[in-house]
Amino acid sequence: MIPKAESLHTEFKTSFSDEVIITLVAFSNAKGGSVYIGVTDKAEVKGADIGKETIQNWVNEIKNKTAPQIIPDVEEILLDNKTVVILSVSEFPIKPVSTKGRYYKRAGNSNHLMSASEISDLYMQTMQYSWDSYPYLGAHIDDLNFEKVKTFIYKVNQVKRFSLPENPVDALFKLNMIKGENPTNAAMILFSKENLRYNVHIGRFKTPSMIIADKMINGNLFDVLEEAMQTIVGHLKFAFEITGRTTQRTEIPEYPLDAIRELLLNALVHRDYQSPTDIQIRIYDNSITFFNPSGLFGNITEDQLKTDNYQASTRNKQIAEVFYLTNDIEKYGSGFIRIRKAIAEYPTMKFSFRNSGHGFLTEFSYEKQKTSVETTVETTERESGGISGGTSGGISGGINIMSKVDLFLFITNNPGLNTKTIKAKTEIPQRTIERWIRELKKNGKIDFLGPKKNGGYHAL
Image 1 (cartoon, helix red, strand yellow):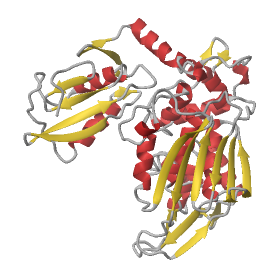
Image 2 (tube, one colour; image 1 turned 120 degrees about the vertical axis):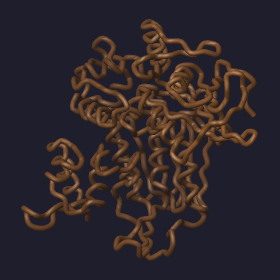
Image 3 (cartoon, one colour; image 1 turned 180 degrees about the vertical axis):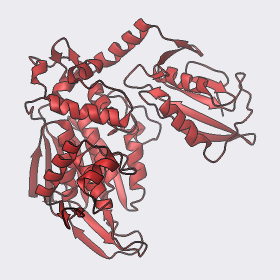
Image 4 (cartoon, one colour; image 1 turned 30 degrees about the vertical axis):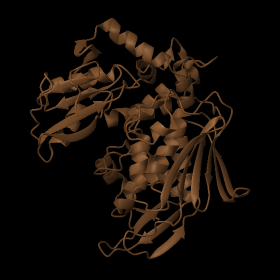
């Protein structure tokens, strides 16, 4: 069934065009909504002409023509043997959203171009609802590590979801993370020179009372994300399988690494940074739990999170925006949906979550470890400090390399390359490559094999 008429949250279109994108932008700047393609403005079903790649091409066009990029949910329905495509978006947490440099709002059942003052007011209103957008008490811009900010700027401009000036202060002003000469809470949490001690506490337990390994991680949130992921993966069990299709063995992690990374990001982004309690991650023989010192934010309930059409609110909007712009967050408010899809490939795995005291507890558990796609050859447990393969989006052609972890994975999949060749394939600055390679060699992850002129780096 479709609505009887267009409204604040509903639009009908007979075909896909820029007008569809304008409507999705207007919905994103308001309370969300759906565009029904293949329906006239009188709610008559005409049907949409859909080919094999049509919908994916539409989604790509919407992403490429919006800033920040929006990714609609897509549903195909059949009415009277005619196909109707429904493109839906939720209210975007960081507003305003634009298309081709223009900003639109939804009023009644139509879209309206926003004025300069409306754009400014909406942006400020959006950011000021978030604790992390307020100035950090007693802090000055000199308290920020501008080298960290430069690394962030490089990542953002590589991803191309947004464009930032190269000057760190100008970039943070553009993101509203500096007010006068005072950095916001988010700016300090992300880029402070001083370690603010927002801890992630990771423990490997044999029983609830017997801990066999323990690590406290803190510092810049990007470094915390990478180090915490490495630490977690270092405690997981991996199955290794040789299928015969390649000469290399296939790794099958105890848990889907993308799902682990999603929960870690969720904890960092949605944490209550005013709470003195640490993020706590407990790894057991057959389960792993994440405790975030903050309950569910906004009006969302546990039951709503169990569905695929929930509308999440963001506790720390500036921190969320930073991870979104670097492509660490793929799409706002869809993390639990992606987690459920990832664990669907693990037959006995369960994903549970609940409010617990003054926090939110999530858990992966299983009865039997997934050890093979076809035939199990070997099961082992890695040494502590292994490196994660769950980086967001993976590596496409060796181009989307944003961290030392990504570089390790690139070398693993492309052994024998020297620094010059790596730079040509990845477009990473020479000094950054050299620094990451030094660190990976120091940690025993890679080594240079062969003669100096013709040799290259290999994963160990």
